[in-house]
Image 1 (cartoon, rainbow, N blue to C red):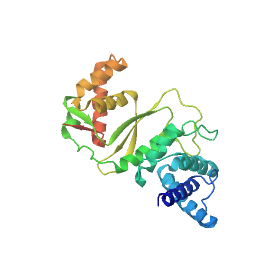
Image 2 (image 1 turned 180 degrees about the horizontal axis):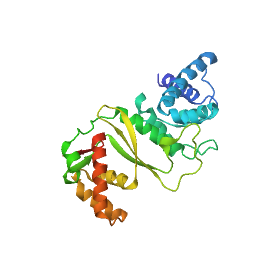
Image 3 (image 1 turned 90 degrees about the horizontal axis):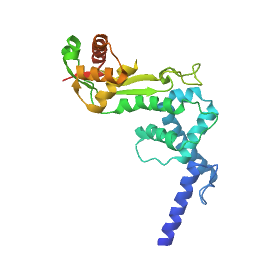
Image 4 (image 1 turned 90 degrees about the vertical axis):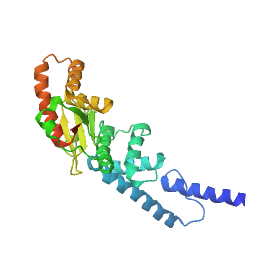
Length: 253
């Protein structure tokens, strides 16, 4: 019985190896090759469809050959740790970070763009709600205890990932990084907002330390970035907090 089980497992392993990478693994003995090819196409096309829906910009800027080669490399190399289709995009991101061998056809912003596209998908399915609009935050933002929404993620990239697409494919990063906050609003729509480094740092502080006095948060940003015009920072900061509060990025206790 044990010998039969071992034999069956060998067939399973050979079956899975061929499905993943038919270019390096022979088909298992027994099933007709035509049937194995049908299985192979069904499995591969399913994964390719999920990745195409999760990373439409990446697919649009790569040639068809390069895109399919990228999907095949992921399919052959990566061992997913989740059975959920909704998490395939995160597995693909893990593959790009840790397993992808550099390829001449890979754009220099591939990983950053993949992360940006994954963020949008992750926020669609993330649990939580955006903060309710606060009249106190609008009327006197610097007097409030503020916090960043659990559905608002401050991000910084070397490349302007939110602008990349066919016809706009930079080869070198600009001098200044791109700072964004990607968030899900009160209508459960995922949006992005380009922000300056000071606003990015403000949101980062709230993300790291939790709710705190708006004035204390502003002073901390000023100290870190070397701002001496505290009055000007307070005035500008108040407007920023109002705008972020209206969008549901920041809330007030």
